[in-house]
Amino acid sequence: MIRGLIVTTILAGLSACYSVPPVPAVSLDNLDSEVQAAIQTARTAALAEPKSGQASGHMGMVLQVHELYRPAVLSYERAIRQEPKEFAWRYYRALSLEQLFQLDAAMGAIDDALRIRPEYTPAILKRAGLLFKLGRFKEADAALAPSLARNPASASILYQMARIKFAEQDFPAAEDLYRRACDAFPAYGAAWYGLAQAERSLGHTADSAKSAQLAETYKDHNPPADDELFAEVQKLATGIDSRLSAGKKLMDEKRFDEAAKFFREILKTHPDQPNALVNLLYMAQFPNQSSPDEVEALYASALRVEPQVSRVYLYYGTALASQGKYDAAVTSIEKAIAIKPDDPEAHLWLADVRDRQKRPALAIEQYRLTLALQPDLRSARLELGKILLGTGRSKEAIDVLLPTVQVQDPYTPYVMLFMTQAYANMGDHAHARQYLEQARAEVLRNGPPELLPQIDQGLARLGPAR
Image (cartoon, rainbow, N blue to C red):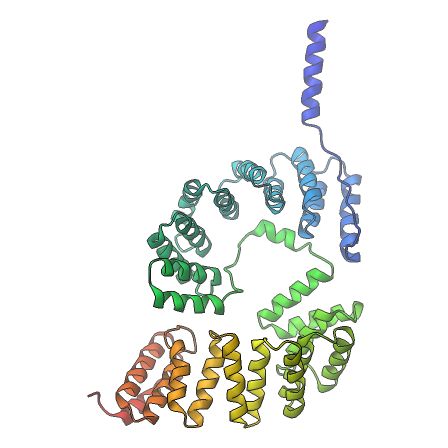
């Protein structure tokens, strides 16, 4: 009798350990109405299908994508009990725990997930990242080594390993790995920044400056995540913030037609949404994006909603400039500068409009103000150098352009040609030929090939090297 009671008690305890947690309650206060509806729908489905891991997991995904990580974790724990062999729920739980800064719990969760699907590279990267955050550098390095052997050109893996080596103060190894990450994905801003730090630590000052410039150029660029599972979570994003982010991403990728459509759709239901209004004003500077009437309507709405935001006046000015209304553009951009005097973008645009007005002295003044605020702004240096050349101030042009010479990007051969012209204007044919030969070598390596005839003609005019 006693033995039976003990067995029953043990079984009851085991049953309690493996019981399915309840569907979590979720506060919907202060959430976008579309987000509220998505959560309510997912929760209703989870309640209606109490034995469905898919319903519980889907609720977790909806909560996770809208950054409600605590109830998302509870939903995933429910889904794991219902479908213990499903990798996704364990993986998503690990990601949500990390967002809650529960790093040790996240480590346990990612280990559980990898026992089910040990080859899933994003999960391996996540595990290494957690080990890195926990200061367990050697374990993080060991976790990545097999993945790098399988994917030696993976920019993401190389970058992670470089961070580990840098944290261990193995700067030569970090420099090598960061450089390989940049080679694998040349627009990897974070990798260029890491490379600059490693090069600085090794005393490679000139190389570090070049890498830092490229880090700034590509600061918003990363290699594709290739995380098919997390992509499924991201597809569930809804609400105004999600749509604004999607539209901004399209805009950053210069897919202006798609981005404009996105923002116009937002304005149908949220006519006073300031980011949508300002982003449409920004894109109005590009061909076929907005009619003059639409620009005026957007400006009037943005002015009503955000009368003290400098970008409203700045992008209205750039839209006017694209229509050839330069005086009105100057007036609007100057209002933007009055609100935010230290904005290099506004000074850069004012310089551009002054240049279009054929007022080089005023353009030069604004370009110099731009560079005083942001000395590494390459486009400002190139435009200022070009105007100085055109006004016969070749020595000043050289001083402005010289910091940009060593940076490798699509503008590099043009910088070399500007330097050639400046030295030729000063009668220094030796330096002019030197830069023209560098320009030719750069074009042969990276293009554009249409510059070659111009370069070869210049070399012929300069005559043989002495």
